[in-house]
Image 1 (cartoon, one colour):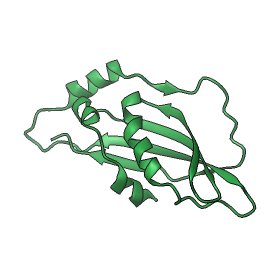
Image 2 (cartoon, rainbow, N blue to C red):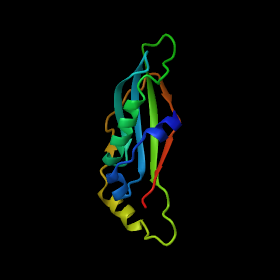
Image 3 (cartoon, one colour):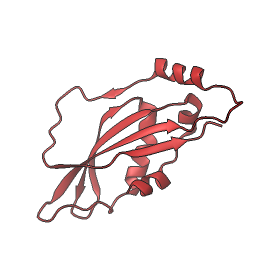
Image 4 (cartoon, rainbow, N blue to C red):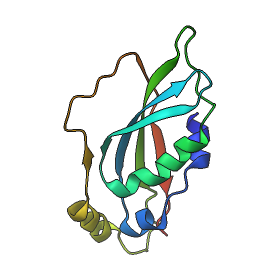
Amino acid sequence: MTQFFKDSIAVSPEIIKSKATGTVVFKFTADQKGTIQKLVIYYADDAILAPPLIEALKKSNHHWVVPDNEKSHDFILSFAISFNPPAQGTPSPQKGVYNFYLKRKPILSMNQVPLDNVTLLPAVLVKYSID
């Protein structure tokens, strides 16, 4: 599934322009057919990071394997988003990264979220070019 997400995620122009980096953690529930039923954002370094990841998750319907004898199953999936370092001789992205950090709007879970039986999936690393 890691390769599926790398191929399915389209980093938005807004993310590229703001040189956004960070982590997004989702919990979702899949039914017996592998269809995503519920989706919760546990944490996101900034709200602009989540939409392309949600779109990729929607494309993953019917790909999730639910253990036998369960009507549904919960999964936790984290994404780490960053950009490829620019080629030498290009302007430094430091100012853009700093501006993003100052203006970011994190998404945080302020209440306890019950987990039940959950499978923690490997993190997906997403890299994009700012050139």
